[in-house]
Length: 327
Image (cartoon, rainbow, N blue to C red; front, side, top):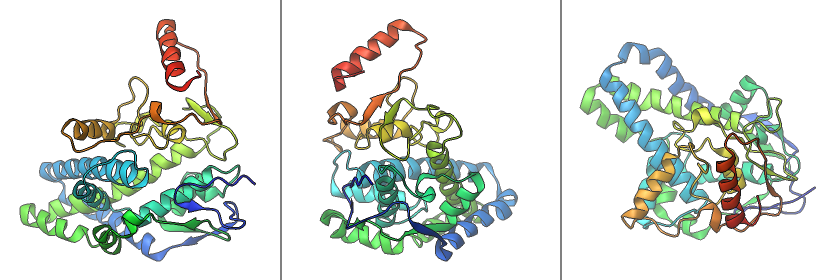
């Protein structure tokens, strides 16, 4: 078995990404079921233009600034640096998405990342089941490996009292926002600004992850980069590139996980990257990592595709050769 550690997941003894049990998690299941029920039962009767505007505005801010930039690109991958106060604000916005606390999100992400870098891993960790079974597993269950790797949180996170407080209280963080929305517009804003938003965000996150990892029969579908000797190839989900704030360019992310930029090709809209560029422009972000700054990986190869414009193809090959030393 190939054992490839990640910054926080360290193999201990015979850590095995394949053997384990998928178990129903009541707390996780009740959480998403409650908000989904609120959205389906109360959403139609409380809809208004104001409610939809709140849904879109809060959804965009929490998913882009919070989940994509704050939790994923900053907290998990450290793809850029910023002031500590700004990091806490971004992570707080990510907590409001309603998926997990800071440490919980790191653990969920890193165990999957560690497993997918092995030659084989459990079906849960690679979204290997069919659509509905994978939904139930991911949104209502957890994987308990027989021999898991050691999860080691770095001191700057472990010793941050604000982040640890958010970890302990991530579910109740919806309450102050709910009170504010009720004061501004009553139950309509609460239902759509909390219930519908959390249900859509959590379910949508799973759905993008499912299609970004599941192989529906074409080994090279939506792949521009291929990693040798790994159990999972990330796939770009173009239809979700905009609404996922760039997270759906997942093949690019598997190829360059430390990169703050996920949309690498022309036409790959990446709103999270635009926000990081804006923060950089005003001096609130620095040490930004992009693909050309990442050392070449020996097992990463570019998947050749028939060009529709030979001039563009030649230019692209020249740029990739200059940046990475190969095409």
